[in-house]
Length: 172
Image: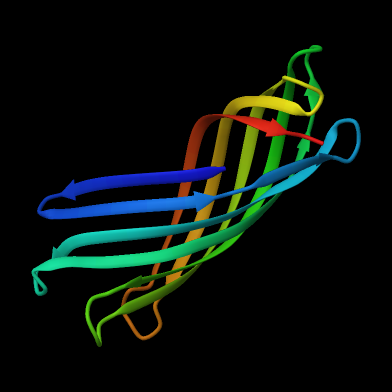
């Protein structure tokens, strides 16, 4: 999967622009007729600028990267010859780094670790023997902690997200 996004957010007098690029190849292998093992490896890079620093009178640029590995296990349940239910449960571990350029000596470097679990509840519509169209909900829970040594900007958080997505996949 390739992803690209550009966002502009305004909150009060603060305006933030964010551009993100990512790549996340994934795979699944049938180890038995119904049991699958697979995973996703992802890498993303983000550029951000905010005008919330009145002392500088300008933008505060921030950039950083994130990478993660998400192994998963699934079970293929045929409903008919042309449709199957494919639930997959995964775990994620990731690391990230971001740096805000506030001007020396106030630059902030944060490193982070992310842990998560995900559940995909896809309907699989085989197009060919190995090509499958997937559509269904994904539920994901994450915990994240950023550490900025020597600064008061440590952060942590948790999130739960739900989405409906579709993809074209090659299964072997």
